[in-house]
Length: 534
Image (cartoon, rainbow, N blue to C red):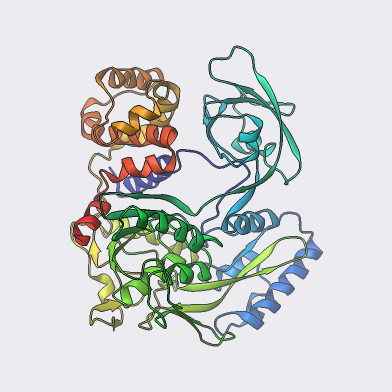
């Protein structure tokens, strides 16, 4: 298989498995990677010219470096910002609202997760504190109609399916829903409201003294969510912690420092920021955190960015814990949001951040925006992500010394103390087809969810796998979808197919906690972290 194809397969797998539940209706999280800049199509030519002038004025007064603003004034907004750095971006009103909403720890909507199965919206989760649950919607329901729009059985674009459900707090939406086992549909009138979302995806005891906590983003309530989770875990005997920040694209700097404060002793420097128009600002631990003592392993990968790297850098530089996984993304720039009257906003880089030892981990963007976009793919093609041993390319960068005398490096992200490669065993063209066409997900929701109960999965989590009858039905399901089975490749990929099906079933019946409990049983990085802590 071509390297680029394998890379695309791995990306597809990430989204197909970890985002099984679908998107929360009324809520979408925009990762802080700075890769996409969209122009506000509602701006007229005159207003667009004024917006350019406004942006240039903000750049002159606030940008992190010296810049020749006059050279930018004749460029479109997106091209203008690309000339600065990959993370300065202009957000149309809708995108600005979604980004702000996601990091605030709540959203406006009805509070359900869904999956589009056979051109029907299948409800895969209902938030118990949300309006949908109060109205009577339950997991397994199928949404047939939204107000007057018929959804079921029609190949409508995703945006059309959910567009009528999303809306402002206090407004109502009418859903026509078929409950499992019913012959006739029910209609619900649901008033949209605010739904709280924790930034903690999972928190549980892996053994008698080691806990696992997964944080998906650094939002306004991350440290509070973490404190609540850790107090419960400490009551269960936690003495060691695996903190999973893989695929955490970042968020608020204050959230990262707030979380670090839970681990570090008083007056320890967590991070400092500095820019041309921003004097150096130091962030120190205030002491009294919930986990100042006890062994700590922090998991990172190539998608751990921004605030995740601030936290990991502090833990590494201060020798507070061990970093396990693969080199992080490499985003060392700090953005401030400047809002416009129409609701759109400019996210402009105003400073760089530096770890306690003084290193900047921002990777180079000298080759331009497009090259920066493909840097992770280059890592994959170069073998950095899959090699059995860590590559020493980062060691060409300037070196720094941690408090305990360990050598660490600047530029290009946080290098883990313990490297664990990306396991590609079983990834082949046939498996890629199953992932690309969502066959495994469809099979779980179409066939298996009625065969297994939450109680059964919970009781047999460690040993569960699909049985021979399930496997035969999977083969029939694949053939019914007009996919030719390559049996040699099928045998090669069967372990990961079985695992995907298991974690998807657990996600549906046991929620995020069940998903991570099941997935961590075979996760190489988690296993290495356990070994390192022991």
